[in-house]
Length: 433
Length: 169
Image (cartoon, rainbow over all chains, first blue to last red):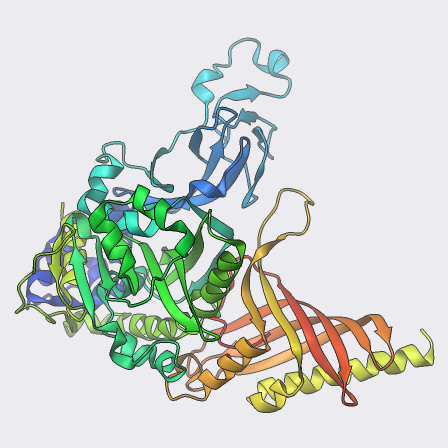
C-alpha cells in the first residue's frame, strides 16, 4: 500500500489523483475507507463525476400539462424544468441572467413565465427574456434580450426519466445507459408509468456512495439489516435475498435481479401492455420477477419490491436519488412510480406498501440509514487515511459470469460484489481522467 | 371560554401529555392501547408551493399512512432483534402545546389540534434532530375512554432533517 506523509488536503490536485489511482483497486476488491470520509475527495468528485455525467432530475409525469414546472437540483445547482405550450420539456439554470437571483422557489406549479424577485426581469417558460421593467427608459434600445435568455441545461429523457448534465461534451444519454437500458425498461418502461404525489425527502448523515453501493449490488446485507421483515412474514425467509442474478454493464451501472417468483408481482390486467412494451426476453424476466434493485451511475437507484402485506402480495416501484450535500451528508429523494393504467385499488395498495417499506418511515428503509451513518462516521477524519484502512470487496472474485437472456456481465447469484467493483471501476476512471 | 370548555381542553391536554410520556418512555403497548380500531394515522409529504396556494402538502403521498393493522406491524417489528433503527432506542422528548378543541360531542367524538416538537437523539451521536409540526386529531369515545381514531401530522419541513422516521409522531 502506498505510504504518504502528506494528508489529503496538503496534496496538490495532481498528487491527490495520483494517490487515488494507486490506492483504489476495484479489480482486486480493495476500496480505501478515505473515499467516504474526505472533503477533498468530495470536491474533486463534484467536478469530475457530478459535473461530467448524466444526473437524474425528475420524471416527465411530474410536469404533465402545458405550463407545468418544477424546480430540481442538478449537481449542486438549482434548475427549473418546464413544459411549454407545445408540450416540449425544457430545463434552465434557476438564475436570472441579469444579476443571478433564483427565479423560482416553489417545488412545482403551473405558469408560463417567471419573474425575478430582484429587478422584475420576466422570462418565458421557453427561456426567452420577455419583460424588463422600464426597459425603454433605462436601456433605450440597447438591451440584447436574445443574449439574455436563461441558461439552457442539457436535458434528455429515457422512458420518462429526465437526466440533465452540465457537460456539453457528454455522450448521448442512451449511449451512457447502454446495455443497462434492457433492465431499465423493465423498471420504468414496462408500461406507462407515473409518479404518485410528491417525492419523499430526508437527510442522512452519510456519504452518497454508500447508498449507491448498497443498491448497485448489496443484497447480502438483507438477511441481517432487514432481518425483521422475514420475522414478520413479509418475505418467506432470511436467505430470500440470495436467489437470482447480479448484473453489471458499462459505465458503472448495476443491479440485482431477484427471481424466480411463483406469483405475478404486477397487475394482471396490464399483461398486454407489458407485452407491447417489452421484448419477449424482458417480459419473461418480468413475469418471474421477485424484486429488482439497482443503481444508474452515479446516484440514481431504483427498486421493485414485492412483499406480502395483510396477507396480500403487492409490489411497488420506486426510484431514489442520493443527492450529495457534503462528504458526510446527503438528501435522499424517493419517488414512487406506478402503472398509469393500473386499477385504482392496486395503485393505492402499491403506494401504501411503498410507504410502509421504503419511505423514511419504511420498515426496510430505516435500518439502512443507521448503517449508512455509522459507516460514514468511521471513515471520516485523518485516521482511516493515515492507517490505510480498506474495505473488502472480494466476494465472488473467483466466479465466472453466466449466459443470460439479457445483456451485461451476469452472475447467477446475488451474493457477489462484482457490481460494486464495477461501480468503483467507473468512478476511478472518471476521477483519474 | 366557559368552565366546561376549559375542562374539555384540560382533558385532551392530559391525554396528549400521557401519550407523549408513553412514546418517550418506549411504552409502545400502552400507547397502542390508546388507538381506536378505525385508526387512520397519516403524515403527508410537505411541498413548497407558489405564493399562498394551499394546501402546501401532498394529498396523495404520505410518510405515514397506517391503519391499526399496519401500526401493529410496526410495533411488532420493534420487538424483533433486527429493528436496528431503534437499537438502542432513540431518546425522544415530545413537547405538546397549543392544544385547541375544535369540535366536541360529549361521549362521542372530538377534534383536537395541537402543536408538536420532537427532540430526537440517537446513541452517542452528538447531533440531535428536531421534528416540528401540527397534529389534527380525531377522537372517538369507546368503553369509557377517548381513543385516537385519526391523526394527520403536518410536518414543518419539506426535507425532513432526520435519518428516518422509526419513531412515531
